[in-house]
Image (tube, rainbow, N blue to C red; front, side):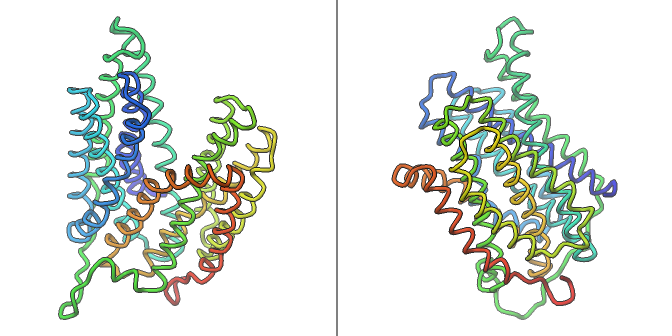
Length: 395
């Protein structure tokens, strides 16, 4: 990993940490102010909702303008959103801040992923750089909520207003407004790549035309299935742990073990990238996920659930670098941004809709049944993953 890539990863961490910290602090403040659980659920959904509608325009904008202009705009929007929450810490403004920080984070990630993919020289390097880049969200999902929580608890106490006071939340929002500015510090020195100009004279191109291409369509389906598995695990493990009588800290540790395993496998993948084949890794991950989902509801102890969570983290954590590598190989260079936008849109649409579907289905078939049904669907999808293929000569 070279210094230029390290700076881009640091930039990604800062803007994503701002959104992750806001996603933790805003619901806590809303609950403190007496908002209902339903209102807090709507607030959380807004972080993903903006990305559903803005992903495609953001991808097209990155295709036209490269890296720094999209990232600069995203930095301004994210810092403004957190700043508004700092000045007006009321529920309607928190909703606006959720929309702004969520959308800005998604737009910045698309521009960064497009730049990193274009800078890679071959398929092996694609797998390496996207394995490194995929570590960023895992780091930011830790540091954003962690430091926001410290500010909420301790800044208020230092000011004399008490832990968890409005002063503590204002201090957290101030920190979250500064983090995106650090993104610009890291990214501003990056050298832009030469623009890719589409051939003239052809029919008008629409983003949805990409879905008419079987390789891209298969990749989106597989990516959506595996993204849904992340959502299932996050949603169902607390319910399963509650049924088993596990404490909140134990349930949190099980989910934390999953996140750590996903980060560890991404640290290891660049070391063996040359030997990895995208479709083999993705199909293997789907088969392993199906097997682990079948076993998960049968486990009674926290230790066994934790071990299963670690194995699931290894399987699902390996997918994103492979999917990103394939995406950059099977789509035209001048449409990488659009392709990334479609992928992000499908993932965030899943994050908005799937928890509601899981809740309804779980009430009918039970928590274990939900694991088994999703596992069966993912296992059947392994056949689609096996048919994924990079461009000739690149796999």
